[in-house]
Structure formats: C-alpha cells, structure tokens
Length: 116
Length: 114
Image (cartoon, rainbow over all chains, first blue to last red):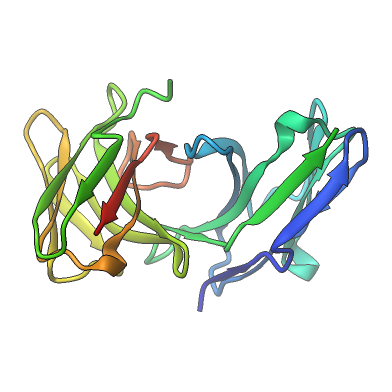
C-alpha cells in the first residue's frame, strides 16, 4: 500500500538554525515521484520540489536541500539558516507511475515554527 | 498567483444545504483534481477530470459530485452538508492526465458548515 509518513508533527527552531523535516514513504511501484509542498499560514499549497525514483541525486536550491535515499525510502528536506518566513506546514507527497498515477498520497504534514 | 483560480475563497453554510465550489485550471492544463484537507483526515484525493471526462476517484462521498465543462473549468458539488464536511477544498491542475510532473494548486475554498 502507498503511504507517506511524516513523523514530526511540529518542530520549533530559532531563526538561523538548520532544520530537517523527515519523510518516509511506502510503495510497491518501481517508478514513482516524490514531492514537497509548503503551506504557509495563508493556506495555499506551494510546490517546492519533484524527485523521480530513478534519480537519487541530492538537490540544493538556495537554503533548501533534499536528501533522497531509496535504500531507506526516505526523502528528507533540510532548511539551512531558517528564517521566520519559513514558518509553515510542509507536506511530503508520493505519486506512482503505475495504476494510481493520477493522485498524490500526502503525508500528514510537519508544522515548522521559526522564532525570531 | 498560481494560475489556478478557486471561488469562493470562503463559504459558510448550514447543515443540510448544498454548495458548489468552482475551479478554473491554469491556462493550457487539461486535468483538474480535487482534494479535501480536514484536520482529522489530512489531504485526501477526491476526484480527477481530464478534458471533460472523469479519470479517477478517491475518497469521495456519494453526497459529493463533480464535473468538468467544455471550457475546462470544474465544479465540485457538495450536498446534504454535515458538520464534518467543514474543510479546505483544493483544486489542482496539470497539463497531462498524469500528475507526475506535479500539480499546480489553487488557494483553496474554506468551507464551514454550521
């Protein structure tokens, strides 16, 4: 069965600290896609990154970086030097290339509080 | 602005009523997806339309229905509303019938049933 687990319900850090948001997934498909979305207090869902199952290269985008490890079925997200504007709920999601290709399975989200 | 437009942004209605949520996909996108975000269930896939045809169904109640019109906008109809239907309803769109390249989400409609 497809499942995305974000075990950290809420994390609080002080500005400029680094923080890692964990995501563990389950799927039987060999080809799948992983995503991270940000939901700020205003409510909209903002796309951050998409990762293919056959590309384990880590990615860095400014203060954001992602660590994809198929061996542990994890796709963790690190924010370096966090800022107050990073405060939001972050969702990890899985989409499969097989039968259920047209829907996402979202984790329950991790609420990140960045304090000044 | 993501390009996906959802109206209304907020809706307050009484139990037993019926409401219609509207979504205009990003220009050029043929697929529309509906998701429900509630406190207890998280983000749940409801239904997908591709170029006017229903393509996939998720955890959508029988009291709920949707359609996609020739101009590609979509409507989600919620009837016999219950308190538990209070949630944020998101629409997303993509160019293909597959969400593998990621969706673009609208800003959501917050439904409050009182």
